Image 1 (cartoon, rainbow, N blue to C red):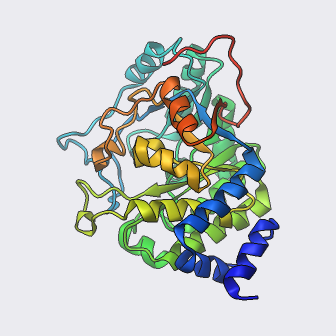
Image 2: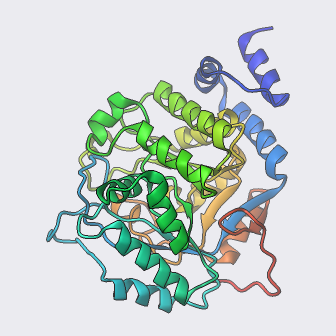
Length: 365
């Protein structure tokens, strides 16, 4: 039996593949075969369903202490295009969207030295007073590590404070590429991979679930991507707390790595499929439509993705500032249903924790 036949046989029997086998598959399998294998793996987990939620993002500031070379979002204090909302402005945004049907508010921003963990705990608490039933998914591991350590708290103490305020889940951002030699170039101030992993491990142990991400398509190699996936798989073996993995495509507009350009759609699809096949213990693979655009997102459903994120409601600037095609990202439920139907699947609304939601009457938002 040759190596490709052996790897394919293992995958079809739901057996785990090693890093060396993942590399061989990534480099040698034709795209059609990766699609076939990834969809088979997806169907074993979620059948014909593709998940979405009704959500919006809240980005309190783009003023950030760190200077990551891939980032188009970050501004310095006082720089043109910088913003920092007051607490009342944040709460006004939440009030303005009350009654929209959203089940999740996603809060991320810059690492802002002006506000501490007690400010953010108060923000969450007051958001929950306005929208008691909405799930708050808040702050990347990088933001959390900074605010917790600068308050002189342990990870457990800091996360307990935020959980008691109403934080239910953590997004997966800040992982970038785990390899030290790559982080040293693209985000040397951001901290080690081990810090990201430790934060998520601690959160999972406290009943706070999370997503995980990988930023790809810049200076990393396929070997670096596989190493990243393997570390995510190891963490999930240990904790079981990761809901979804999100491969994030590097977008090249308006940042220090713009000279690199962007990787191809074919590489996007291959990366999605390999994420599904390597991460045999992570239930959901998300094709984040704001990053890919709607047409590529539809293609992604033929490469193992079973989640496309949510309605967004023109509430995030992170990818539009980096050159993504949707400058005012929003999708109605009808749009989502059409994308899933065109790809041969059925759109299913979920909450933050992947519980399915059945509404008496669906209304496009």
